[in-house]
Image (cartoon, rainbow, N blue to C red; front, side, top):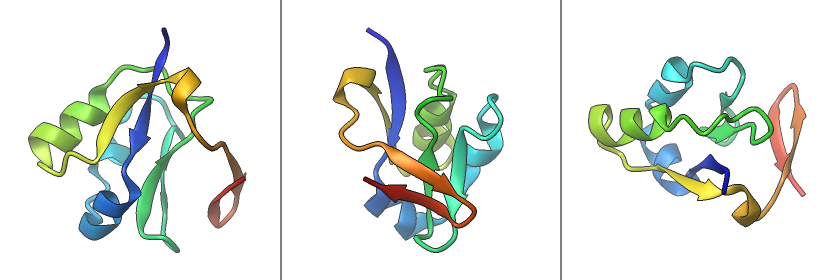
Length: 87
């Protein structure tokens, strides 16, 4: 089963560290929405490498990112210049 990163928006927005966006090896996969003050994952670009989980857990100590099977992604999103919109 293929897994992708999922960010807990409540934890992430409380910390605003943005480290995951800097360490993700795949460009434009983890982005930051300044309006909502949280990072988000472009699910279609995530390769499941889990580097962001290690950064968030070990370096930042926030535990806001976990890997979930692609079949369990609840809501997709639509990209815009201002961030994302769930649908």
